[in-house]
Length: 632
Image (tube, rainbow, N blue to C red; front, side):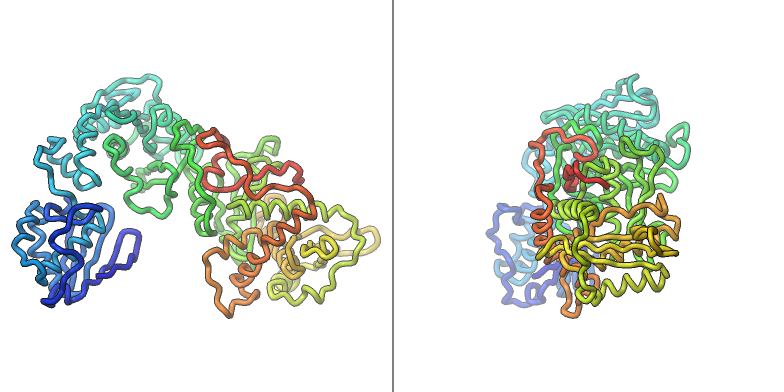
């Protein structure tokens, strides 16, 4: 029997016909198996709630956290027809005792039990003593959910809950009391005049640490916080209400609709009961790829249209130890974009989400975002940012980093998806600034050394042909014998002549080869011109942003195979080449321009407070470098 996962929660498994039909089959396990290591044994029973659909030559089983498909023999449904009732009623021991050891039926039965155990669809036999929780409905829920039902039931049996609300008779408070009571936990309802009218606070005390969740609404959106201490739940609730109210596009209804109140109260009670019994948090059960492992998740719910889903979220006040999480840097571009989506969630995110919106994606992919609040010392009006790149995903990453830098203090910090990305961006910014003011006592690099680059030909033709922009491109070597070059694209003045100046800067780049530098400078110029023409730029005619070029190439190329025919004319091939040169370029720029940001900046001690936006970015695995000498 072999298996190959097909989705997050589904696995197809082939059952060889000889395991179920041939008399010589021995199966995967014998009749003397013990329960060690989670292997099935004669006392195992099927988890409550498991649904089974017979197939022509197999079975499809659906459990609480996943599903399993067994295929390969028409005998599989027959064997299951004999096995299902003993599994559901706890009579598996007697059923297996009636099977001849070494027979095909015994082998097929053991093989099926192996697969069920692999997918957490089996439970140990109930103990001789009565179930720790007397309520049959609660006992079934625990059996369907817990890895160790007896321990979870014992924890829940000692738990005592309290519901705090401004108005104890509000629909949300009374619904929470009903839900906790149905979960078998004694509940006390307590008025709390310090709570807002629409918020409730649920706490539980037992043999473990006290846990709490809060539920309420901001605008028309309801929320349920992740389990934590009482102080953490109160802080998270206050921050969520402020964010949701600020992001609301419709006025807040005067009262929470009755069914909506029941939804929020039930979700809050569910999370609290799971925390009290040390069961998996409901946010982790759906294998939602948008959620980030290690980051607490909040539930956001809307009444119209009816929708509720979880979102990875960290509030500004991180009190509990599990809120001081620090994810490892993303392993690739796709993972970085997942974290950007979490940080930029339009209702509760702390940063703007760079999206294409209604911007044209030709001749260059464009994304735009508007930071939620200006950085200290900047203009009070929101500043819309627009950026482009060889691909939309690269444009979104670059724009997110620029928005974060603007909110942190544009001339003080450099942000990157990982240490190498941040360092590459910071070193390019420093090199471009210093080369811009350095005297040009050497002639530009001969165009023969860079004019044949396929990416340059594409972007230069787009700029001067399709967009009809009169422009001039020059490439200068950063230093004699150094493998670093700065390329600049300037618009040619309409009436060139003495004293008219070199023309406005459209784009610049610093890269390891003259061709790469020229290509990125031309790409930056196309982005600047297209953004202005679509009225997307915040300040048309302003200076372009500092160059970042190929700093993201290692992230984009990580784990992505490149076909043999993908030369630098293909974006994937070009990014792979850039990734191979990035480390040497950073070493060169660091040597030329003195001490710069380190690859691994000092991190706060474990559980130390790292508050503010910089701390939030670091918690999500991003790198924030302090670069005070940067002048943007």
